[in-house]
Length: 199
Length: 293
Image (cartoon, rainbow over all chains, first blue to last red; front, top):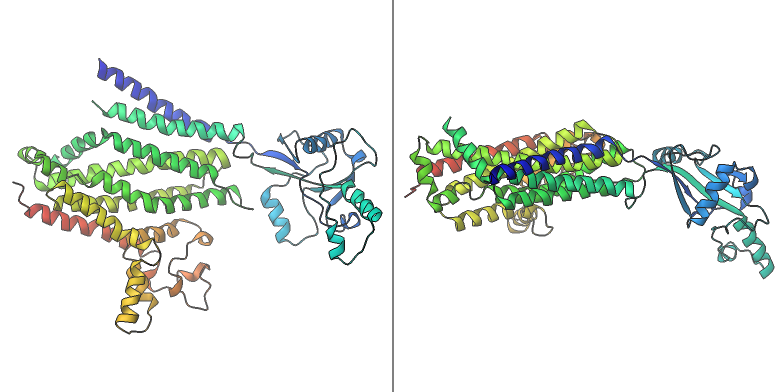
């Protein structure tokens, strides 16, 4: 009777393990669309387009584009949405697309867009471009305080955003759920196997 | 038929070992976590998963021999010390049946453990990256099972040669140190020692091919070379860099082809087969002649 019960529990655990092994593989983690404003434009605004980076005025972004840009700024520099929920005007290259464009040494930078912010929009979260005043001194320019402030305003006005397609981070629920299922499958398989084997 | 009966009985007994199931859980977790953190800068999902299984093979190169030796070192010595061998041989079983039956059972155990490890890694890898590069996965699985089996063969043979448990433990430990550890840690590696004896003690000129040939006697090194046979050319590990001529890039596709035959990736199959067959012959020979009283 006891043996039967151990055997039954063991068989159920092995069956559960099979299901838990197969399910994550049948439903892989779906890539998400990243909007990352954390990067800083490498050159002065005039060079953006020459540099292969698309320059778009905030007013010219689609409503969804505006919304995603704002959410990225509000979210500390990054905002992710499922595939199909991106903005129509944004490109979402994969990591290998970006690598290919670098290998080709082309003048395009897929997924990079510089958003030209309006001069006065109190509702828009502040730009997260970083301004390095020391850079001008290194380049041999000597600027007075008002000129530095002018440059700072200019840098902050042109905010670089990288949009791309990628896997959600490892601590995202979608990833953790699948890992948990497989760990549980291993535990279930070995416990079930032991119960089926032991007298 | 008796061999099969011994194998079945032994497999039933081994399956009841809580320690082995615990080890399987541990290795399954290690494989799942390794697959979980697998990623590659600017690599396609297929390349990431292929790289994962090469990395998994590197981890198993160290851990799998421990599992195989622990699972097998008492296969026959345990029966001899407990007296169970007399019961086994009192049935219509010959020593050959006992030896082969025990071997078959332990080979099955290790194959099962490797399967659990691969199930966990494949499941997480497919869930994370959505691809299943069958060639690399099945290829490394086969090579890994073969590698595990060489250590089962070694452990069962040493177990057959040992009359008591303590001797069997010492044999298993020594075989791991001599065949794996001495090829892993820098400064105390077998090739380094051979080079010192050859150049400093004997005063001979450096001979990289000789040192690499000595290094290639380890099943650990042979396993790493054998994984090169089942991965794309650009993922091959360069093991014997010092034997590659200067005009050939070590990581290039033909770096393996310019090596002497006895250092090529293909020769790893000979080394693995040697470590599977020769210990068995020696172990069986000693078991046949041992006094079991």
